[in-house]
Length: 169
Image (cartoon, rainbow, N blue to C red; front, side, top):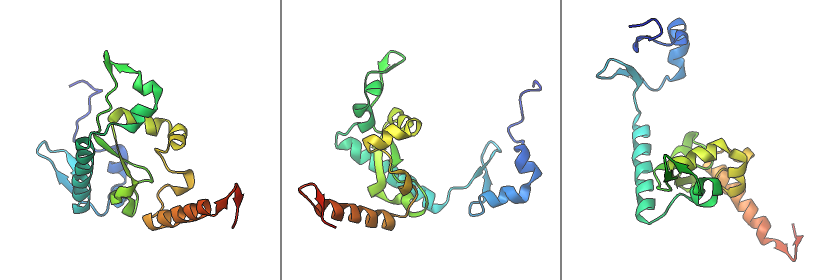
């Protein structure tokens, strides 16, 4: 073994030097050892439920005959090629429009099914993604679902009060 190759069981310097702080990073999830001896964070019950719901969400969207709206909307993705093949618009990931904090993780009205290329594009081009409606406005990121519903109701109310281009509020 050469000197540049590290043993996979060796912890990162931070984790080895500050074990109390490292344990505080993920207090809810105990570490468990895999068959190869590597340590990983144990998945909580909530994580497993979310993963199952996300797979089902994508599966239902695929069965409905849907394709990635990002790939269909963005010309550079629609016309790009990878290894001689067109960029795939096949749905296989869940994107969270409003973030993943707390209740947002499993709040399905805030989900959209995307392809890998489309999901990568959304996170690499946030300003353009906001324009196209694939990301929420900056102030709405990681707000609770109840706050988002209240904000949407206010916007809908304001829109319904507009008459002949004049705001009636």
